[in-house]
Length: 94
Image 1 (cartoon, helix red, strand yellow):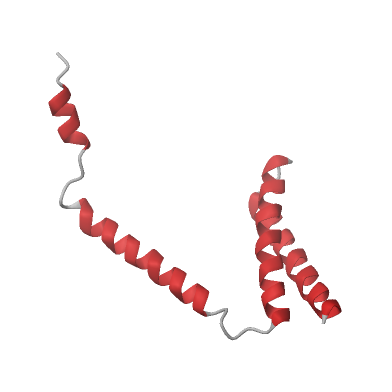
Image 2 (image 1 turned 90 degrees about the vertical axis):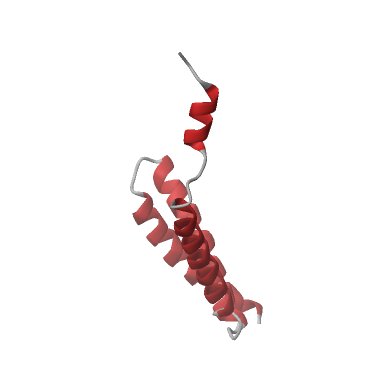
């Protein structure tokens, strides 16, 4: 027969899984801090190129998925095009 308390107990996290979760959380936090601090000393042109590349990569991955192609190829092409457009537009605006 179905016992709710037995099934509920099996869904709870075990002490063995908590250190692994904490380790992953620290890794993601460290990567986030390092990646954000890398943008601190960038010129406006470099910041625009980085932003354009990130937006282009995301858009290219989505478009690559929608049209049935490879999301990785779409992200690479979109990222390169976005970085070039961001750098060119930033230089024209200065």
